[in-house]
Amino acid sequence: MIARFSNLKERYPFIPQFIRFFLVGAINTGIDFAVLNFLIFFTEKSSGVYYPVFKFISFMIAVTNSYFMNKYWTFKSDDACGAKPGEFLKFLGVYLVGAIVNVGVATYVVNYISAPIGFSPVLWANVGACFAVVFTLTWNFVGLKFIVFKK
Image 1 (tube, rainbow, N blue to C red):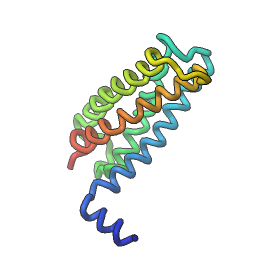
Image 2: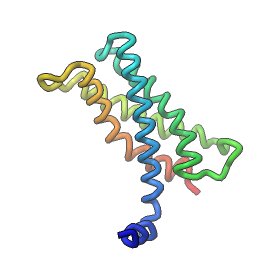
Image 3: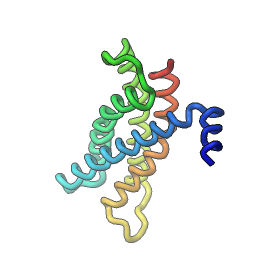
Image 4: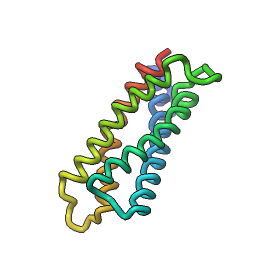
């Protein structure tokens, strides 16, 4: 079985990188959800105009953490001194598109699709955020691998 995974790694060298990206994404999703739920709890607002603002704030805090984890662990940048010229701007560009996708999908689900019976507004806000993660994951990996941290 281990030989099968080794062969897979040789045939598809991006798979270990994608696994690291996925783990970083899971951590950042936790940060995103924690901040989102803190803002909802603190203001007692879980929909309407407040939701996209809260979702954007929580997403951007997670993005800041994402830059450092992806740069130094996922894509193993050898630039220990910091960002290469333009790298952080490219990163922000990729994540700005990701933010638009993330906030757009989450907001659409929360504000335009009725929550199933028995779902609280807070639970439905989190469901919207889950849908957004699915759409954002692919875009962010491709953007980071081929635009920002390409070797």
